[in-house]
Amino acid sequence: MSADHAGVLADATTPIMAAVDSWSDRLVQLSHSLHREPETAFEEHRSCAKIVELVTAAGFAVERGVGGLDTAFTATRGTGELTLGLCAEYDALPGIGHACGHNVNGAAAAGAALALATMADELGIRVKLIGTPAEESGGGKAILLRAGVFDDVAAAMMAHADGQDTVEGSSLALTQWTVDYTGRSSHAATAPWEGANALDAVSVAYHAIGLLRQQLEPGSVVSFAVTEGGSAPNVIPAHTRAAVEVRAPSVPQLHRTLARVRACLEAGALATATSVEITAAAEEFADLRQDRSMTQAYVRALKALGRTPVSRAGEHIASTDMGNVSQVLPSIHPTIGYDVSDAAHHTAEFTEHGTSPSADTAVLDAAAAMALVGAELARDPGQRTRLLHGVRERPPARGDAREPT
Image 1 (spheres, rainbow, N blue to C red):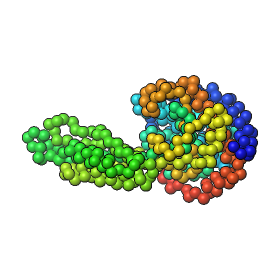
Image 2 (image 1 turned 120 degrees about the horizontal axis):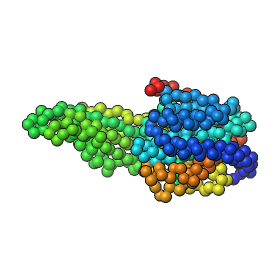
Image 3 (image 1 turned 135 degrees about the horizontal axis):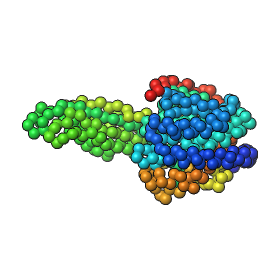
Image 4 (image 1 turned 45 degrees about the vertical axis):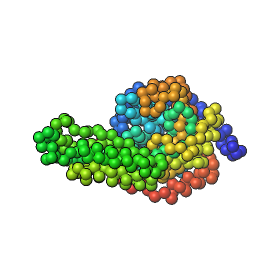
């Protein structure tokens, strides 16, 4: 650590830690409350309101329904020229609640914003907490990015719940499709030749994709599920539906894989005299790019808190719409660890650990670490210049927000 970095960290640690400590009870309560009342994509009304209530009490100016999303918000405080963004996630998974720890993610982001806000005038910054719904299914950050919600943000941060502290990991780019085959119904015993079997179409596509897997580029993954396959064995099904997910280490590779998968899906229709409609089921997720300078600052901050993160450089871990943000502006998306007893994300077992004492500590430590990163970015002349230049030179988003639901 350079003397300059050490000095910034020393100067900021005491006020940041004091601020996190002053809000600690309410941050833990927030995490527990989000966990207790899980809400799924685009339906996070109570969760959104809980975070808004907390930051409103701290003097943040709140705008709800940003980007055309009812459960998205922005909360800002400070008038400095450098805007630092904290991304709060708070959506859960159907049936198993906060099995990805977004209650921890959301509370930690809120805590970081609260702590940074106490130094906003001193640092010459504007703190912007962005409530980002529907990470698990839908891609709220991608929608908000396109709607211009991040246009004024010079750097963005969030920390994700995990079983260990990690940095530098990437994620897989992701596309989700709904595939509908339409044929012609007929009696399966007396006149099957009069039908056009939509189940045959989805079956041909499924097997074609299975054969394709041998020739996929390394890292590409195709997942396939038949969600509607017909109603009775004696009826030639006129309609079937499948859900398809395609992932790859980069957006260009994703698009190459998608072209091959689309050909397999169209082959199912061609072979069975049916028609196929392929529609996007969610926003496309880009691969995650972790900003090196911000990562180094986060590592310094975490070590000052007594934690030593593990590097996952070169690894692609799941998929996240934070990848879309990171393609446009400097960003970090480390993980903050707590005891999950080896439970995997997206399992009921992971959910059970979301309000443990170690999860509560993770909320507070992640909040402090991200706030310390913000302080270092603001006080380092080189970083401040880099970020301000980047946001000035960046073209604005297209601004096509969704219509409110």
